[in-house]
Amino acid sequence: MAVEIGGTEIVRAAALLGAGFAMGVGSIGPALAEGFIGVKAVEAIGKNPGEAGLLTRTMLVGQAVSESTGIYSLVVALQLIFVA
Amino acid sequence: MIQQLVFMVGGTKLKFNVVTIIMTWVVMAVCLLFAWAATKEAAEVPRSWQTLAEALYSAFKGIVREALGEVYGERYLPLILALFIFLCLCNWIGVIPFLHEPTKDLNTPLCLGILGFFIAHGTAIKVKGLGRYIKGYFEPMWFIMPLNLVGELAKVVSISFRLFGNIVGGSIIIIIVNHLVYSLFFPPFLNLFFGLFVGTVQAFVFTMLTLVYISVQIR
Image (cartoon, rainbow over all chains, first blue to last red; front, side):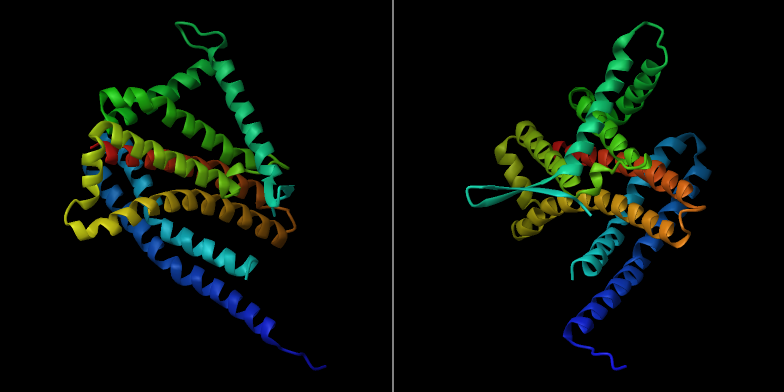
């Protein structure tokens, strides 16, 4: 049985491949950044346990900010999967 | 994914995301119910719901005063607290079956982000005066101005897409894992993690970033 592969199939395949690449490559940076922020926060809490609440709050906000590039790649991947 | 109600009014299409509107009303009703329960038997020694409300209030009072100072902290505390409670309930409501988070629709976070943008800049104009506010864009050197302008607008996009992406990503992961394990084992834990934990953290982050944007403009 011959399977016809036309333009639309190639576009669909490229979009799915692009979505995979967007998520895979795009999540490297946020993962490293969040780990680094976590390490620094743990170090600071170890030095100064009294300020644990403030440090945790600052850590969460910093992690969420550095996470935004990952979220952008998620949005791009969703666009590629569901719209393209 | 989202049901839309389309009206034709004089040649222009008006689209209403019905599910989002209804869910926002549900969240608003829960908010009002919480406020009513907290103030119903207001007493010197707090009981049940009043304890929760007072704990939230005193927790946020310190944070907001630290960021905005005495005068503006008092003025913006209700806004920040209301934003946090609203977003928290918005993200939590997806845990209940057949209810959807209003934040799963980009319109809700985007509208709240634009609200924060206008509040921050309005405050800046009121505090610093129009001249100093405009001069702030030319700060280090005059040709940096377009960069500063784009930076301010990118804040709105980043804050709203962060909330939207987190909630949508969570719900898509829940759907996919449900599909893979035939709804047998994982879903309750995933719902708890993405609905309660990530929802609370993201609501807190959205609130804190709005607060930081206001405080950056005031300083």
